Image 1 (tube, one colour):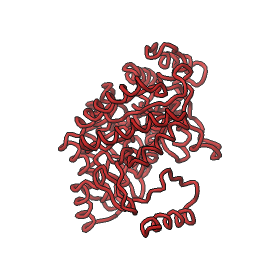
Image 2 (image 1 turned 90 degrees about the vertical axis):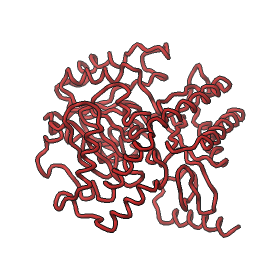
Image 3 (image 1 turned 135 degrees about the vertical axis):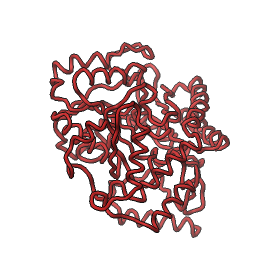
Length: 439
């Protein structure tokens, strides 16, 4: 065994001894360094990163302007707690996010540390603003792993199993998962039964006057990269407005250029009442934001919301530089280019591989749903796992998703070169064909 292999094996053993088994790892890779789209492990092996830290690295690993801004801020101030002694980067980043959020309403922003914290605070603010308690969430949703967000999430294993009882006052409705629609058997045609369902829901399940907010990912992430039909989000907004319900857009994974717009809701011309963001907001530095209409964000009294580390100075300067990087390098346009190239190749592959049930996406947020049979649509979880494994063996790191764990999800950093994109997609194509042939 070489010294580097010995180092990797030793680190894995140390991890097993020191870290709970509930903290899973799917690759066995220990990263030494990373730059752009390339990860280098402790053995010197290089991988193309096609999962971007699960959507955190839209601007790639260690972009120089962000790293430099963090270094400069570290020399001045690491922490003070904004609720006691304030600092300008917090205000500047809030101003920037307010200006970016869709719609013309006056906006305000607060900061937290993670996507789950952002969702928790959005729920708190919505309840305080409306004086209602119920929350509507959607099947196939993922909103986090905390008590409230785990309850909002719609996948039992591994997220909720054994952790009950769950939070009360949460009501689940079907999402616009057209490929596996509960109501419509004419896919890809759509009868929008998922919207029509609300009239029955408000009669049979809970009165609309009890509902504070409806929370939805504009493009469902962990649920399988589910892109709704054009009428769905505007339809939800209309329902919310008619019932006095706040619409919360969870843009934790779909935000900051991933879909070809700064935020995914822009594709449908919808202005959410509150929006949660995190992941690619700060190029890997823990930060999340809750941005919403000022009338709702100002509803809680002073001290009702906040947290010790939320909007940390290092995170705020990282966020400011990350947004500048996205804008200066026109990464929203690059996301569209990545999407066009990748979708064309995957659609062509679908023609020759019957185990590809669906290829869907928007911008550079793309999912490949694997099935054992196109007619029955039986999920092919094992084949999906093989594809991920074969890609890793050939130096491409990606991950799966979906409520049935049968969706290969592509979260390619938006700084990927054409050569890197071609190489990675070629490996993916070869891995899919290999796994399908072995079945």
